[in-house]
Image 1 (spheres, rainbow, N blue to C red):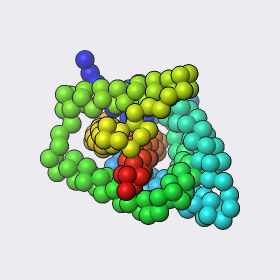
Image 2 (cartoon, helix red, strand yellow):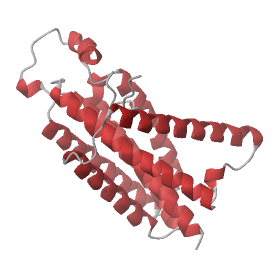
Image 3 (spheres, rainbow, N blue to C red):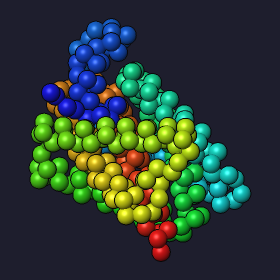
Image 4 (cartoon, rainbow, N blue to C red):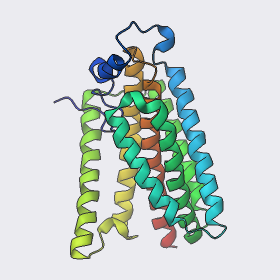
Amino acid sequence: MNFNSKNPFLSDKRFSSNAVSKAEEVHEAKIIDYNQEMTLSGTINKTAILFLILTAAAMVTWWMAFNGMNPIVPAFGGAIIGLILVVVSSFKPHLSPYLAPGYALFEGLFIGGISAIFEIKYPGIVVNAVSATLVTFLVCLGLYKFKIVKVTEQFKSVVIASTLAIATYYLISWLASLIFNFTPVHYGNGMMSIGISVFVIIIAALNLFLDFDQIEKGVQQRMPKFMEWFGAMGLMITLVWLYVEFLRLLSKLSSKD
């Protein structure tokens, strides 16, 4: 069985000639020259742009939250619109140059909103969560770049199976809490809840390796230029997930003090 990245953007199905053929048909069939191909440097630049947009939007929301605005409003709205843009882009990769910046903008509202909520309750938690996320990203990037960690099929199968298990657990827990009115185990600050958060963070970090691998494959397969935005957007999704999980873990540890 062939397991690949379950990031909706960074999958072999998306990074293949078939995935972009329909988009190319829209612009008529033509030979793609070097300047129209996906490159690693181009993807890095697009990721940096999305990161700056997300950070700027988060800072604006943060400032507004600490000046009287309810941070729940931009957090909820940003999450919903960001999810919609993710779904649309996953089916229309050629629209990524337009949708990716929009995703970063609205996801920034979400990040800024929830960061303000956590910061009000646990002062200093945001700086620690941001630092932990960036350090994790850099460590994973270094391990991948120097081939210390190799993305094999077995590696993919373990990471993807774990990611699916986490997603299923979160969904079932959320639905059960609505229907039966109980508090899921991972909501508390007990040792089991903290252990679950640590496990989820590890899996989120391992997903970065799958993301790096799929971006590299996209470059090697000479995908169209718009796939740089597509790959950058997928990588941002994983980073946002990782940051949110760090916030949750640190809040649990802080609440035990």
